Image (cartoon, rainbow over all chains, first blue to last red; front, side, top):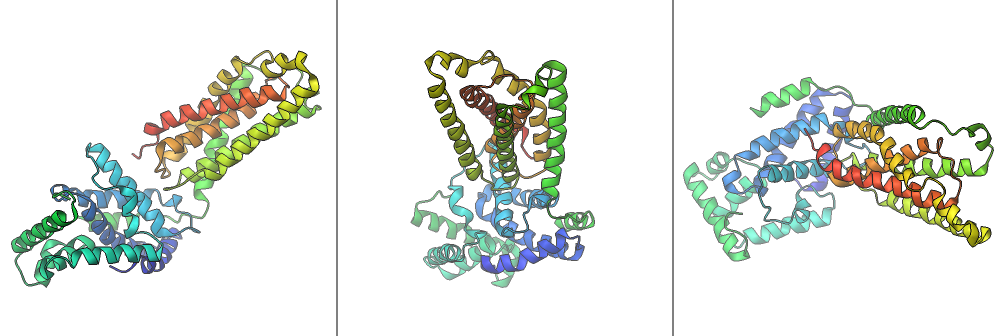
Length: 185
Length: 213
């Protein structure tokens, strides 16, 4: 995944063209957003609910479409996008009466526009991932941060999907044990 | 799966000019105010001395006070119709406005002396006034929320509060064409009470009325 300032520089012009009616730019934008949103929701849904991620991605894309008039052209696009994705996530939790285990204010890093803050958050993730063995860490990075599917990540590392799933699960578990989070986070 | 969706959305794309949101909210707000004005004229009636009153300063003070309240509410509602919006500046504006008229009211009471205190503060309609304001704000609130539902408010109670603040302010502007009170303390106290009651009700209703379909 590119760093947020690149995302802003890349996505905002696409959005501005889309608002002027450029369907090709709009399609390119939605495809990019689908990738980013997959990663965004995958990171925030417990594995047991990961199947809802695709629904959330679709609902969010639809909300972006029907509510695009609320994007103020003078403002950062990624901030607008994040606010919508976050609303959809909270709405999903509320509908399913789930308790959030993470303070949501702190997870803005993925779409944040402040370069230094996002870079720091990214470095934190890298630091944390460095504490577990290379293969699980790489799998987690690809599937949870970069939006790849388990099958894609497994193929890239030359392992079976099942083995990759087990490896991701163990990796997350040892991370959870080390940093005191919930095992299902 | 999601490719179909993207095809569908891309095919459905229509140009969205700048200020589309402003125009849409403004259109609905004007409709709401018009309904509220018709309701006021049919139910309460214009003040009988309107033609004389427009020659007095107090009429225009009331006019400006309520118009500024409505404008602050409209800006707040516009901000909060957008994801992640806030109404910090408008809140400061409301506090400043009420502080200024409150100070003017105190000066008026000091100048007129203790004998006039009761009239200045309670006039003849103190208890009815906030009730009428809230009633007249209903069509304006409904129209505003209708427009905001198609926007993207993410803080629903606060967005509802802003819509209620605008509805209350605009309803009071309409009500001022009926109301014959002219005490500065009365205006500050009872108009503000009516507007804030509309805003609080707006926040309560907004929690569910503004949920995204």
